[in-house]
Length: 481
Image 1 (cartoon, rainbow, N blue to C red):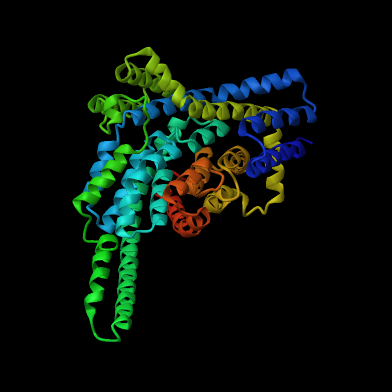
Image 2 (cartoon, helix red, strand yellow; image 1 turned 60 degrees about the horizontal axis):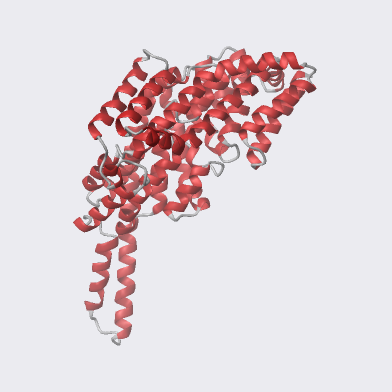
């Protein structure tokens, strides 16, 4: 009975989330509650399940809420704009350089863990340069999305917090194990960006040759077939403006830099930030580095670290209390939404674990699957993480699929951390290709591309990259076979 009800709860949540028929908070709260009553538990037992589940995710929720607020303030004061502007200038319009700089900008922009903010800052900064060079905006989306996914391994990014909430692990501890993989992933992605940049360079060159040939042919027909190549000159000038990889003029780079300075922000930020200049850059840079350093050292609870960091950021950057409250309200929607989902997941987790539904369902699933498959179930799910991202939302993947895989694999001796890392690493690269991710729709809108073409262009490179990360995680000790 417990297995049947447990399967019904998970299937209902996953299906309704995929179809977009229910909000995560509603699904993770109401459906497990109904399931507990159907399984024969009373209100007093349900209250105990809820309290147990809530206590297991409370620290995660607090950390996520204050991390989102803290990094939202750092974006308001445009702390990262000078680095973005420098990267754009350094590339100087070289196609390979622009591709590699795109990765760096994606990494910097995604320090706050917000996909929407990252796209809002990075795409307006880079798209004019891509257009000027004749580079594909789909390449921009591919490189930005992959770099953001690597940074999404941060504990406040979302997936790590969700994985920690449903498996009982501290997100900061999970992140500590992922740091080496993040570093290697960024280096590998820079290499992939260089290769894709070379491929894009060849494509642009071929397009320029075809365009010039068409202009020559048109000119020849217009002059009665005489061998006059003067008509080709405009084409060469045009190719220089759009397809030449030798460089972008100073005006082009300055335009892109102004676009980067104008991206993001709002009228309530400090005046320097409104003007495109960072507000108190040295203080804020030291503050961010201090917060990250304390998190890595693990000397204080993560929630307290972000509370202290947020307090310092507000008091120094916004001396007026009214401005401080305005900034909190401005970012409170995103923070409260994420925190609310994690708290609702506590209800789901408490009911499923304390009632015994999850253990019963995992045991029955082990009995149905071939014995040779079950010990490697987490690895199989990891390898299939990218395709699954196209049919499962992030919430469904971590709140419905991960608990089942975790319990089934750990019952047969797989390490809990290994299971979490395998599912997480295999899935996380596909975060910003999924049609269930609202920020992806924002990104394709800003870039002026089609979501279906983005998926077709980016899917195979991103899936290959995720599998490579899974393989590398083994010698790094992140995944233990």
